Length: 289
Image 1 (tube, rainbow, N blue to C red):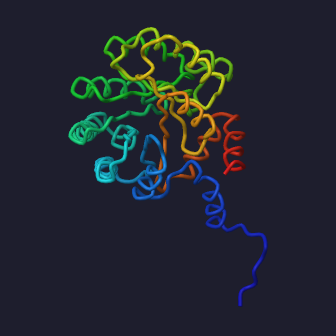
Image 2 (cartoon, rainbow, N blue to C red):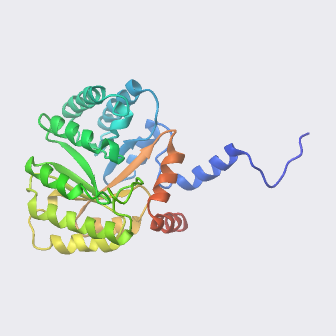
Image 3 (cartoon, rainbow, N blue to C red):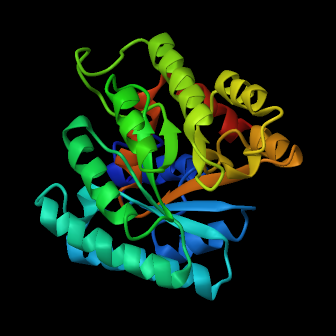
């Protein structure tokens, strides 16, 4: 009989322990787990977290839309361009997203295109605008930590783009990105105000932050406006549930960003690293469960 120990360095055991905590904001390993999680949400935003073959990755997005339809779930997909070819070739990525967009149109599903690290920004905006010409039910993520984002928004507004505004989850040098939390928050506020003043009622603006101060500012800015139905508040699955309930109670549209797949551990680590406050939010979400 092998001797057992109360302490272990077994990576698999540690990973299982971490997953037990992370499942608050991770929908699971497979599409069926994501669909099960979606049934529990008032509204649902889903992203696929696996990193495998590009062709299979593109096919997974098609499958998840079919599953949403089959289960009569209100939801949409959020695509990472690097997962469908941008890390290899621009044209490959464009072809795959075009295919996904055509399927989304047939399925009657809205589609978000994520923004990743700075090296992908220019190409991602170009791909988005190309897709947007054919499918107006497509949105793009803009990150407030990047100094270029105001200029990008000015360009995108001219095309009537749907925008999801986030703080950003990638490391970048101070030449291209704000470093201090205060600077990132101030830029988020400025970009949010700019969008509220320039987007039309048939467009979508998603305010994606767990920051109560910024959420309250958004609510204050929305008072007396006729565009509330075009505004979404988006959160990570399992984070700030009390704030989500409050927003829904006050008549706002709330969506959850629910990733799934085998790459949950690097994803969780990046989410924790992106802002120190996320550690507090994640700890609170576990305590409140």
